[in-house]
Image 1: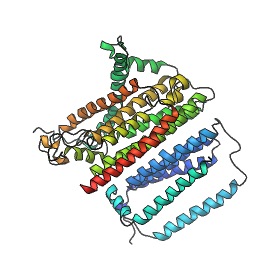
Image 2: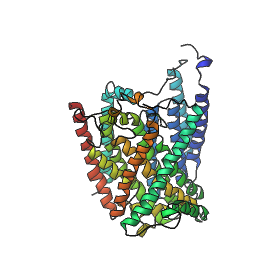
Image 3: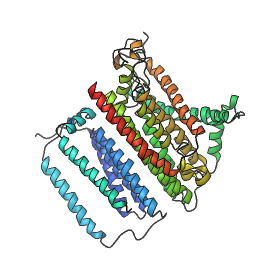
Image 4: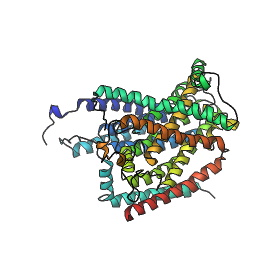
Amino acid sequence: MSSMLAADVNVAQNVGFYIIAAIMVFGALRVVSGRNVVHTALWLVVVLGGVAAQYLLAAAEFVAISQVMVYIGAVMVLFLFGIMLTRATIGEESDLNNKNWSIGIPVSLLLAGTLVWVIVDQYRGEVLASPDEPMSTTAISDVFLREGLVPFLALSFVLLAAAIGAIVLARKD
Amino acid sequence: MMSIALEIPYWGQSLLRVLGGIGAVLLPAGTIVYLFLFKMMSFMQSRLGPMEAGPYGSMQLLAEVGKWLQKEDIIPENADAKIYKLAPVIVLVSTFLLVVVVPFGPDALFTDFSAGVFYALAIGSVSVIGILVAGWSSANKYSLLGGLRAAGQLIAYELPMVLAVVGVVIQAGSMNLQQIVVAQNSGSIFGWDGVGFPFVLTQFVGFLIFMIAVQAELTQVPFDMPIAESELVSGYMTEYSGFRFLIFFIGEFATAGVFAFIASVLFLGGWGIPFSWFGWESLDAVDGWMNIVGPVIMLTKMLVLTGIIMWVRFSYPRFREDQLQKFAWKVLIPLSLANIAVTAILKVAI
């Protein structure tokens, strides 16, 4: 593939990407460094909302909405619900870090390195055409109900099994 | 036929959209509070309601807003001040984000999301975060209990709401709210197209489930366990005063209005009138004056639906917490799943 022409670069999109990315990195740092569980959970909401914004920027409307619905509307609400039901202290806590926290740094660096390497290796020098308009929901459903039907059903069964397993484990009677 | 051949520049459109969005949130809120909360409730209880401010008490709303704005903004000493201040804003912002997908006319819309229904349901669940942290940050046991109850209730009733809408999406063949309006107004009942084909006729079960879920999402009686004033002293709103309480208050009734807008788009034909009346073939053929008439039709339908919501609110006693959860998980969700199955089978068969 040839290199990208200057005329093809959408400046607003790039500026938006880096602004949102900066907010997300700051939020992610606050998630791991915060001293109040509820505050860190809210910073996590900011990070996940930033992911949804990046999807919107990439014209992936449906994925962005799914991100909001699943992660902000369901997962984070459940997180907050759980935190408030069990330990609802206001103010800072000092015993949030355990002694193994330093192992997290090399693990996360390794993970980030692997991801960056895989993506750079896959799309080496290749430039993806930016879509003129967002992919329609019909097109997405056509893909995963035709070519992707078997993995889709398999995933559904895995999730169903996980849900039933969770109920069985949680119910003692 | 008269048409408005008016080219509005981009900045003008944006300005109109912003003003329209503010109007579409605040106007229903004010109307609902005055018409139903002040007047209808009073008449149902054999009293007159507010009569002093303005003719027939119509300026009462301004007086109330003025009162709340003057009150001191109290933050409890042990509260988490930052989050405490942020929580009402999250609730109100989610209402403004919700109205963005609602179409009010052929061109009078804020944004043409292809997955509009999905977006509305996703954003509708964001306000739960605001309510949860409001309860937590107040540093008050009643508030925390109220917040937790609200979250449990909203999670339980979001599911039947999503599932009830799926029937409409299957029938319209689109998740775009504008396409759903077109599908209802260009349809016909056994070849007769006098009233179009509002989905409430075939999706009546879905409509009922949706309206019940809306009642619960708005924490209106009989689903007002989270703010039960006799045991929780208004739940997550206990500590709020002044303009922060006002924001919660506006948020509650504005969300009622917006959910009624969405329900009227999904089930009652939205802004449209049957296209056969004026011989419109498609969305592009619809005359420009519908951009003026459409919002009026939407407002009328919204008032009818919120009227029903308020009527139920003033008539029924409160559910117990266990009845509330059982009703969602054991009645509404199985019923809405059955509705989806039947709709899908009929859609393929016919």
